[in-house]
Amino acid sequence: QVQLVESGGGLVQAGGSLRLSCAASGSIFSINGMGWYRQAPGKQRELVAGITSGGSTNYADSVKGRFTISRDNAKNTVYLQMNNLKPEDTAVYYCNVDVSNGSVGVRYWGKGTLVTVSS
Image 1 (cartoon, rainbow, N blue to C red):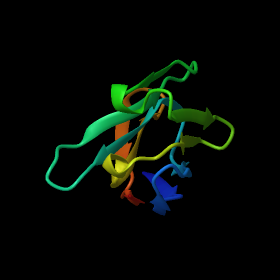
Image 2: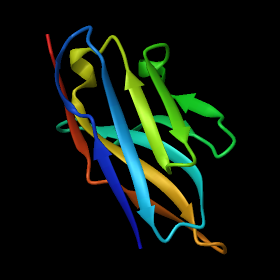
Image 3: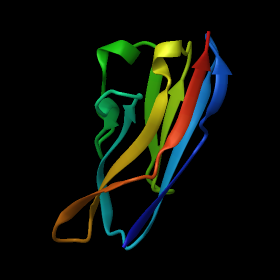
């Protein structure tokens, strides 16, 4: 089994910054893709940013130029640096990790961390 522990959410004023972290532990042979999703009240969960095992990244158009995803493979951790936050970034942020046990990959979700941006 794999556990994901997220941290770094909180309340911040518009224009501020936060850094989210998500550490994976447990039965891990290797980690493929890692990513962050978010879900605002009354809306569907959406991809915010993703990063492959090789370091290639992709971002939602709404966060390009403001958010940066990175990973530390030695620590099985993915980060999301969020700058110039806007009230519309308010949501519960979830990390998602594709873990391989050596034969198959399984995607795991974190429990979510709340980010609230006040205007």
